[in-house]
Image (cartoon, rainbow, N blue to C red; front, side, top):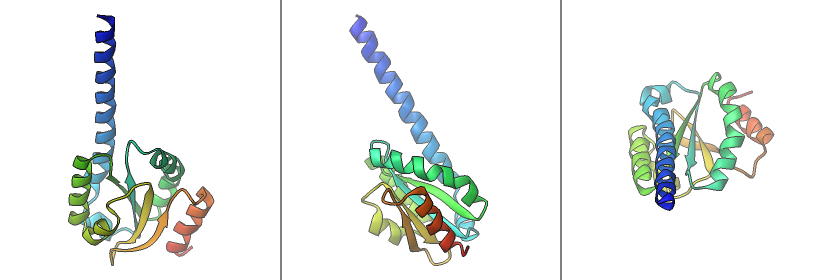
Length: 146
């Protein structure tokens, strides 16, 4: 009986954690529109999966940069690569934002951030774990002209 209760509790905890992860990802994508993309100076698209240790390490490195760069017109969003369902949603989001070609080229991997010119929808840079936080800062600063 105790094993059954422990198993049920474990499943409930996992489901609740999955719901939190899904809601945190979807809220970012819900606020991103073609208007907000076109009015930004740079679009940063994170390709991340919940099961990916490299993605978690990348998130820890990129998250501290977000606040200062959002004020400079960098718009961050996440394409969730966790499951087939979330990948389909990310593909739809990419199409809706005019990033279908980017999705077609990069939508089969995770653990990186593409930096995209919002006016041309062309990839102009990339952030990944091979870069230190300082190198990421230099990349962003160079793309923003200062």
